[in-house]
Length: 252
Image (tube, rainbow, N blue to C red):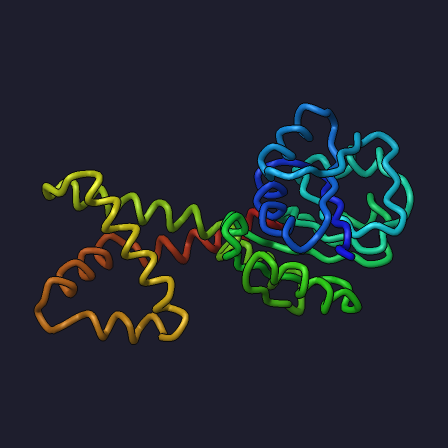
């Protein structure tokens, strides 16, 4: 018999995760109004059990908390009972804060990304150790996972993998724009860019980035010229700063 997962919140992250998890678990969702819950159900394309937030009883449930971080106090005040396990995907929201608003026998912070929609999320986890095995099993359903030893490490990883899809989208769009600028048709540029990312995504699983770069860059060649332009434009420093700023944001 499938285990039931209780989603509190029905936004983009909850929907992305549920689309993949629905094959392995029974899904129920809790929210403020039926309209948002109906949209969640429609996006999944399968029946889900729907509950309104007011006085919802968490007792014995495995809960995925997917609300906006700023709303945790308001949401917590409308819940009752003690969950069996609580998994929070709220960026920058400490375990201490979560536990002060929602009662659970165990709490884990998780940081998936939107690749959960296609079962390819890189998810980092930390929290109560007795839930580590269950947490890894649960989030493995949406992609690879890594349990980290501290909340600081999870917040750093949030700036890398959690926010990373947005950074890569900027790079992907910019590369396609560069090809269009030189005369390639937009549709063709997008096709080439998508092929590049698909192949690179597999390649990076098996090689260090520096070795891939060295393998592509021949002396005085086209790649060396393009790579020098990226370095001159500060792309490396910009990427490092992006992770730093995102990490700093999780701490405030």
